[in-house]
Amino acid sequence: MSRGRTPAPAVTPARWIADADGLDAVVAALTVVDVYAMDTEFHRERTYYPRLALVQIAWDDEVVLVDPLATDVTALASTFDTDALVVMHAAGQDLEVLRHATGAIPARIFDTQVAAGFLGMSSPSLTSLVDHHLGLRLPKGDRLTDWLARPLGTAQRDYAAADVAHLIELYGLLSAQLRASGRTEWAETECEILRRRSRPVVDPDDAWLRIKEVKHLRGQTRGVAKELAAWRERMAQRADQPVRFIMSDLALVNIAQRNPSSAEDLHGIRGIDGRHLRQPTLGAVLEAVERGRSLDLGDFDRPSGTSTTLTRELRPAVTLIAAWISQKARDEQLDQSLLATRGDVEALLRGDEDSRLARGWRHQLVGEPIRRMVEGRAAVAYEPGHGLVLEPRAGTLDPR
Image 1: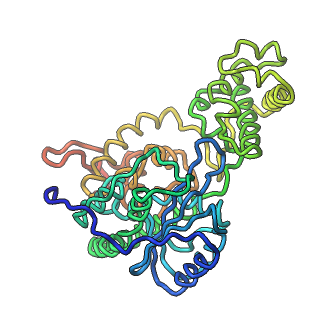
Image 2: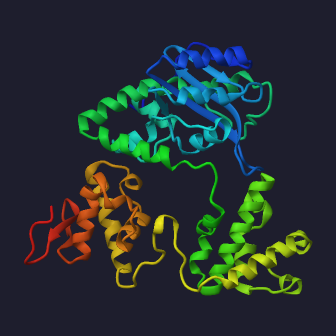
Image 3: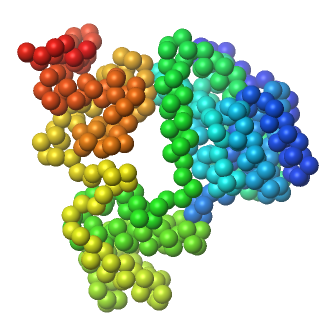
């Protein structure tokens, strides 16, 4: 299907919605349809919260571009409470943006990227999905487009409209394939997990978990990093600036390792500059360090009561299990990251209550076999022509 690709056919020209009456008409139309498509354009390079620049919506033969700079898009929230299914592509960030801009997110979503993952495509772009399933070539966009600029040019509007123009057709094709493969429920469950996972803001007390270098810290230094990360997150939220504008990860981790008690101790720490040495920032940093010192030593709880470490005995098993999962994903024609990540495996082996492999279809497909492996009831072996397979160990039942 790689030959003969043609540009996407012209659709009904997208209508530009920039007044309350126009938006009210869109909302009225959406409240009576069963399915519609939605996408957003936004910027967040210099802000903590995403700045919504455009909302694209398609239903029936209509495509509209809603200007959030000229209209109150909170009106869209009323459409999210209906029974309509909202088709999106790679919806994670769009849901966050919509929640921040409207105060709500759709009650039901169908993510075409997630659905394609259950059909053997690995996190495909919308362009590749449209190309593969519809044989069409979407217009190319400029990744440096300033979506907050007005007026938007014709090419920008066409590109934005194309992001939703074919989603409902894709939904129909992907849904049929999911039904044929018996994976409709899997995809629906995963879309709901994605929908529920969207959060309005990061909990400052959990911000330290997003810093990769923190996992190498122990005891008091980890406590200091935890308190510094919470202070930085609150400051970023208050100022509506990216956390890196407040303090870099490098500076934060270096402060935790140096454990300073005074302004003099902060001098010479890599990543620290003059603004960190002036009040009130200086006092706030030193107070955060002091609070970190007073925390109990050892590991801190992660969200939802999960633990932070994996026993030394189980660590070698993770690599072996990851290799088997890679083979399993190929055999099942699943996106590997959708089936199970390394983090999922570690969470299961730690006994985390909210591990994705502890319940549902993943538990049946890989979670339970992993438990048999670590309990010594099954083993991974190489079989010519089939790759890695799971075999029963002597004296045990067939694990398949």
